[in-house]
Image (cartoon, rainbow, N blue to C red; front, side, top):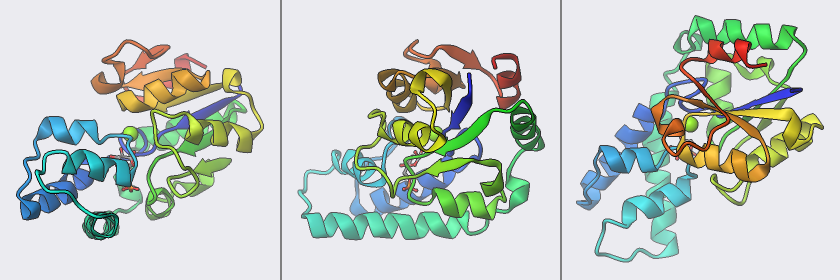
Length: 210
Ligand code: G6P
Ligand code: MG
């Protein structure tokens, strides 16, 4: 193993409740039902793909321009939440683990579907830990497509077989698998389909895997 590619939301930071709040507010305004199951389906999925999943519950059809405006509305609400993030929003054990992995000579990358990934990494002072970052602005196909992880591996100059993907979402584990990566499922959602190479309970468990 030469490299580790981390998902961001739900793995390095906990921003999913901010996504949920912002989607819930939009769904409420549009009078669309939106529950816990709906929230979980959006994990790891790009902004526009997530919007399509939210709008599935609506009898109304929206034009491309309307969808752009709805995605922007949700993103504004989401960014208002993440603008308040600070380095204190990253667990000490996360920083310690990243430092230990680097000390062992592993290359580290972020592979996130989020267009806000770089903003979150800056707010939380995580950027400097990573040798490569690929976010939602650099991909055309969302997880479960492996594009984001393949781009991260290419930036690190490693093959998929030499890299481990760490994910909390089922879509992310499927992406890792179809890209030829080993994967570590963090938490129950990622482990659900039984497709991950490893299961971990917290990031520090990685130290025993690599
Ligand atoms: C992550 C989150 C998803 C979110 C996606 C896009 O993968 O888990 O819930 O939909 O990023 O994020 P963005 O910041 O571009 O809306
Ligand atoms: Mg995630």
